[in-house]
Image 1 (tube, helix red, strand yellow):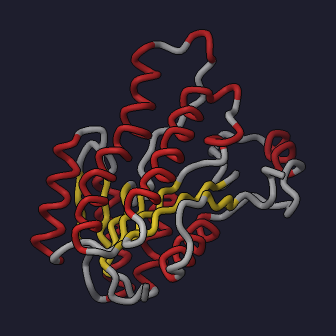
Image 2 (cartoon, helix red, strand yellow):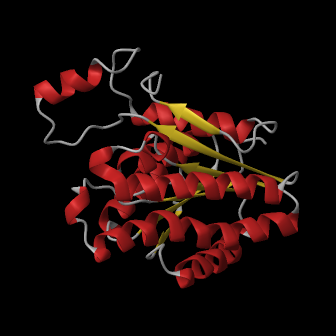
Image 3 (spheres, helix red, strand yellow):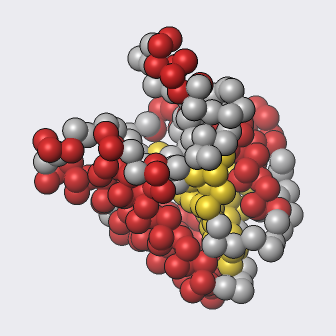
Amino acid sequence: MEISGCRVLITGSAKRVGKVIALELARLGAAVILHAFKSNEAAAAAASEIEALTSCRPLVLSGDISQRETWTAMDSEIEKHYGGLDVWVHNASVFAATPFFSVSDREWQHFMDVNLKGAFFGAQVFGGEMKKKGRGKIIAIGDVAGELIWPSYIPYSVSRAGMHALMKGLARLLAPDVQVNVIAPGPVLLPENTDDAERQRILETIPLSRIGEPEDVAKAVSFLMSNDFVTGQVLRVDGGRSL
């Protein structure tokens, strides 16, 4: 698939990794569509950056991805403005450490609703549309935690593992018309409160000896968009940490 001219929705694209993905795809000529939930001001600022880069202001959508209505509303808006979608990059998620024995029902459900159920609803809506049209790509931004299962992040990791499984199943369901893949980043954009000792500890676990950059993830997205013979894969972008 040629990236230039592609209509691409990036969920969770107001800031951090999602924003960098949107900027990179816009730079490559894609018609990007932004999405945010509680970061609407940041999404507007990201749209202004893309407009300055491309002279075209992207559509900005808003909504809670754990609700099916959000996905159907986004589908309607994209159809109205662009006539449909070529690529869905699913980046929106929630992330937090949760001491296992004190996790509440509400905390558990929040991870499942946003990280897993949200992806499921999106897959139903956009996967179904792509299958009807006979073409498309779905690229989900997951996490190596979905395979390694971090003890301090078990609910989060389980929600990511479920999303990885969902996308693998979707790859088989939608083949051969639609390619579906997962990008699983390792340490990228460490939390602001990470101290030097923790940063050094993380660096020592990475064979390539550096923390990942959002651009590393964005380049993986562009690779999967442009390659039509890759589907059902989990591409680890982690500097070799998972070795």
